Image (cartoon, rainbow, N blue to C red; front, side, top):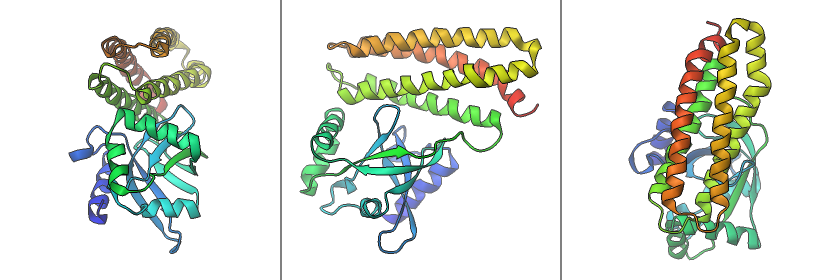
Length: 275
């Protein structure tokens, strides 16, 4: 992408918490900041990414089908510590260039869901590198705790919206990457609720014993969401998942989760922000 166009995307991304319009509206997008291999200066590039479980994400050095590897790829080969912005979190990560069977398998998985990756590789005349970004530090968003909670919830809402769009546009056979997208979201949501149950709720309940019934309701809603997550994961484990069945399960989860997040924010954000 031209530098000026890149800068427009970067500015819009940062101003709107990861949301952009135009051709990238509703897409999984991040900002990758690398250190120049020759200049030593920082350079930020907007990139599409792919979930790969709960421990890392993947980016592909397509450069829009250019015959040359993009500058950001050369940079991270020289300096593998990078900075990632996903609209909710900004964190340091280690860039790992995947090789051999692992690279080929994950690239094939990406192409199965989006043939555009294969078209880029054909046009480029080169093997497109696949890079895993592994978080080094991944703390909560900065700012007031209540605002941080809303940002985290917003990230889950956004990811569910992307998954619903992917499911609705999928063919008769469920792509492996779409399964991974769903499972990655399930892992993230389970981890978030576990941290709330184990740390945030007990701390708030200790300071506000009059709200015991509220926290009991929130914990009960977590159990409902967890059952829906387990049902979704069981469905994804089947060999012959029908997109229609997956769409129904994701829809049920979205409806239940949206109501839960709205209620939780209404009650907890003022407490967390000191109101």
